[in-house]
View 1 (cartoon, rainbow, N blue to C red):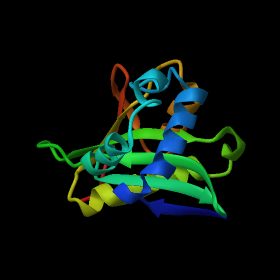
View 2 (cartoon, rainbow, N blue to C red; view 1 turned 45 degrees about the vertical axis):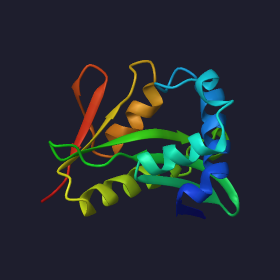
View 3 (cartoon, one colour; view 1 turned 120 degrees about the vertical axis):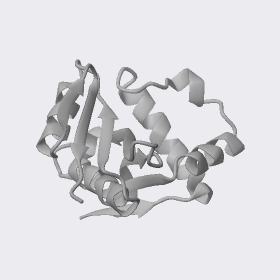
View 4 (cartoon, rainbow, N blue to C red; view 1 turned 90 degrees about the vertical axis):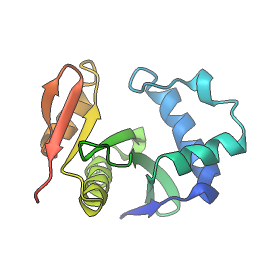
Amino acid sequence: MIGLRVLSADDWAAWREMRLAALRDAPGAFGANLAGWEHEDEPRWRRRLIDVPFNVLAEAGDVPVGMVSGTAPDRGRAVELISMWVAPSARGRGVGDALIDAVVRWAAAQAADRVVLRVYEHNRHAADLYRRNGFTRTAGEWMARRLSS
């Protein structure tokens, strides 16, 4: 059973552990890199969880197995889904679907009209996951999913 936990700044250590694991596992999948984060201090990690308002860990029992974040809606009422990652041991078990659903639901509650994300062409498995969850390619590396009004 996969559970989802919405994080606050006080959860910075758990977020740090997952984020560094993601950057080690998939260095080409993110705009950030391991070198830019591995030596950051607690205040920087806390700021990240404050600056990006929706942050979730997926857990199998007490073990974190995935993560995702959602930005505040922009002026065009779009929420950006960022920092998505599922641990290799949990892939194929619906974790990615649950994390995407969490961001989509949160975005709808924020009166957003769409969720957008960036996925690199070489990351075929991620692109397939997003397509399966209603996202379509818009331009270049961007995909979007409209939310019902």
